[in-house]
Image 1 (cartoon, rainbow over the protein chains, first blue to last red):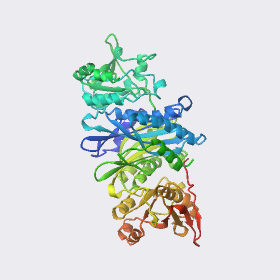
Image 2 (image 1 turned 120 degrees about the horizontal axis):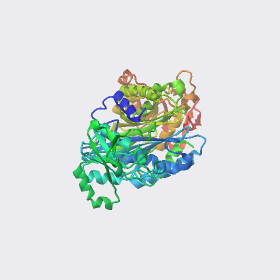
Image 3 (image 1 turned 90 degrees about the horizontal axis):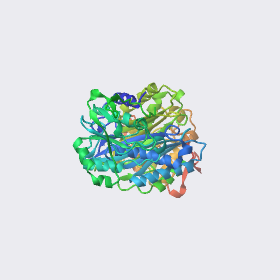
Image 4 (image 1 turned 180 degrees about the vertical axis):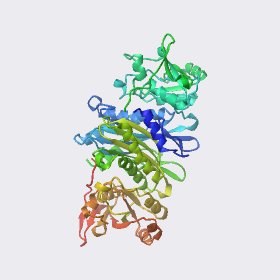
Amino acid sequence: MKELKIAEEIRKTAGNPGKGVHVGIGDDCAVLTYDRRKYLLWAADMLIEDVHFNVKSAGYERIGRKAVAVNISDVAAMGGVPKYITVSIGIPPARRVASIVKTVYKGINKVCREYGVKIVGGDTNRSEKLVIDVSIIGFVTKKQLVTRAGAKEGDLVLITGPVRDGKKAHLDFDPRVKESGSLVRDYRIHSMIDVSDGIAPDLGRICDRSGVGAVVSADSVPLSRGLSLKDALYYGESFELLFTMSTSGAKRLLKDNAFRREGCKYFVIGEVTQKKDGLRLMDEKGVETALKMRGFEHL
Amino acid sequence: MKELKIAEEIRKTAGNPGKGVHVGIGDDCAVLTYDRRKYLLWAADMLIEDVHFNVKSAGYERIGRKAVAVNISDVAAMGGVPKYITVSIGIPPARRVASIVKTVYKGINKVCREYGVKIVGGDTNRSEKLVIDVSIIGFVTKKQLVTRAGAKEGDLVLITGPVRDGKKAHLDFDPRVKESGSLVRDYRIHSMIDVSDGIAPDLGRICDRSGVGAVVSADSVPLSRGLSLKDALYYGESFELLFTMSTSGAKRLLKDNAFRREGCKYFVIGEVTQKKDGLRLMDEKGVETALKMRGFEHL
């Protein structure tokens, strides 16, 4: 069963969350009312040993870093600034608990300092496998909020960098907070998501929530060393930002030297189309084929 | 290594959380600034198969219920009203995922409706053992906030009910939101905690955070059927509220028929003393012995 279907099922049975909730289940973060100028963003992501990481090859410090980084990325994907986390950890009883907690928190503290995030709570338990669930709160200026639901027909589809080899990069990626901040400050971004499951499934999520279709242009997808187009479309855990904006906005971004000077990148990889066209890939010869939503699924 | 020591270690390395945080690591919830009248309360609690529950004897619906109830209890322990949750679940791949998610959410939705809580986000993963981490947001009127840190020498120590047999009751307990609401509305409660690890360790936490000692009077501890005094002191997962208030406040509570009419109970079980006296138990003959902090530890 796909995450998408499960989320849909949960949304249906959960019912209407009420007026304090601007965006509920089905986006990178829940969006709650906060004050006149800002919304509160709230997300939680769980990492599980041997599903999201291997302890031996990753090491505890990088696992701690990743557990926080995936949550920071969720806040960036909504145009927000990450602020506070709580950390729940389950640790196998046979292992050296105190030393593991210390090392996991070394990674957590480092990435928190790097992104100005503060730890405000936690819960430590026994568990057969190592489990870390981080919950994050961030804030976004109301008019800078970007959801998955705003893509418009005719928008261009952009990505902040080549999809990396998730198997190698997934522990050490840098959440695109700087890129997100520049984009939502200076441009009107219509929709955005962080690439956790691959370009195809994640663009599919934008299409699904926005009620549009999209076509990805094969020769414009940036490829990192050693990756094929198929890898780029379906490799997860890259955490680049995938977003859509008007053609005129994208043209202005093209000339934006300040954006590049800050070390930010972007690549135009496709276009938003009508819903009935679905999600498609256009090859070098202009031939279009349907793209499957299937990607790196955690379930 | 005890949870208390780990929390202390984490607090030290995490550093000062800054001015947006009224209470950070080390209480039932983190307390964040919200508006002029209210604080935002935020907690996360993780439940793990074969540590906190057994799937076969509990059933998925009750596990879902418990995962939310322990978090509601955290908000009640600060005098607040629970409002929103996010739910992260890890499910063993060999099992029938869709049907499990549905049944777990049946329990989640039921307890949410009962307490007026809304689900606003979630994350579903594979996992070797079933894991559920719920994160909760609630709100508390500023002057009704109660922490673990306000107990004063001379306070009486009270509890909202007999500690139940955690082995049996831990799945079906009712978080004491009603009791908490009445107490913080009509009385000045100096400190409060929900009994998750037993009277002794949890009263120890209040003492630790408040810089006081306490003596529990053996013959005034309410015992539920079949439990010994030792069970009541060290059985966890009961989730009654343990709190301290002035003697005059407690006298007023004693005559409060409205409180009882609402079905709320309380029992005076001890007194707050000087820090140097530590945590002690006074037996029927008035002889005092030291109480150990050791309880039902999840680590």
